[in-house]
Amino acid sequence: MLRIPRRNHYIKPICQIFMLLGLTILAWQAIHRPQEVEPNIYPYLTSLSPNLVIACQEEGLAISPDAWLDLLAIRSTIPDQESQNLIRQIYSQKPFKHLDWGGMDPALVATVQRHREILLEYPYFRPGQYVFPISGETWYTDTFGAERSGGERKHEGTDLFGQEGTPIVSIATGYVEKLGWNRLGGERVGVRGDDGNYYYYAHLQQIAPSLYIGKRVGKGDAIGSMGHTGDAIGTPDHLHFGIELPDGTWINPYPFLIIWQKYGVD
Image 1 (cartoon, rainbow, N blue to C red):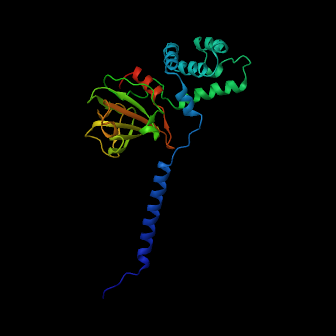
Image 2: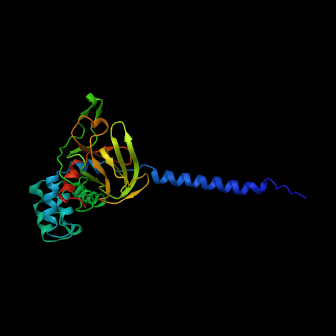
Image 3: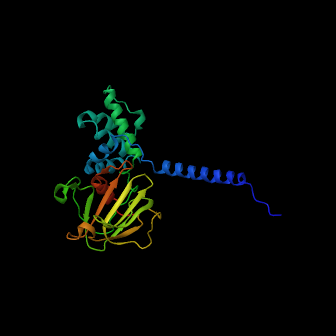
């Protein structure tokens, strides 16, 4: 005799499938939820003069591995005359946490300490942490915020000029989030860095054939080659490089690029 399965036999498996689907959606949302970033972090980082950063690195690395952080946090916050006592202590290899602030305003001391924490937590200036995106000769200036399309939009990156076909590499580890053609960027690659930021490489002549959406890329891995695709069709060959924070804010890459170029390509 043929037995017809009871309907409630299917209820439990169906419920389990929906629960699993719900958990998957929640996990995806948690992973892709924009990270909250304190509003003072990137204004501080992008305000730092590359010359000051390099000077502190060259001086500090001769003292101890992290002394440049101490020097940069102090010199970017306190006027030169007021900071001399602290600088002497750094040169004597006194640990930052044991510095004698000599009755300095507690609010100013707290600002220096916070700036050092930012430099430590967001290591864009740490030598070797990131690499320069161009493997070859290039020239560029700070044009972030310049008008484009007759004032309809602002330039949200840095243009690095060079010869057509110059190799472009990933500045950091991450995974390919976007790939291929768009109207403004032409042939472009978007990498979501392990640090949470989105790194945008546009106007490429060619995209590295090994790339695909979701592919892991390492620091220094091939992205493509320099070109003038998209709205750059009438301009000299260049890479448009942009940095977008998880909350959708584009920040100025120029000061970071200066430091990364000093230490070359990985």
